[in-house]
Image (cartoon, rainbow, N blue to C red):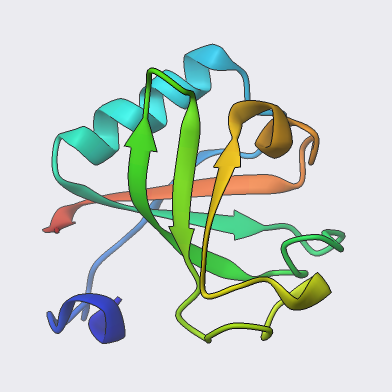
Length: 112
């Protein structure tokens, strides 16, 4: 997070939001946390071949109308599986298709 925000994350804890197939209720929890100014991360699980195994993205926008989440890859374009771009936007359906292989983390201490 330091590379993204310039703020120290020493001692900061990201709480595991969920690691199950993302549904509309969980999408709402992510949206609420993001719109409250909390730092939100998405981590692909170890089996993910689309986003990249264990790849972590910063959530840069949550659009509740279109049910989309915009992501930033801090490692840069092409560093994840399938040559993911540096920034991308996924729909709830696309995120849900990863099953229980997606995790969200939220930090209320580090606000962006």
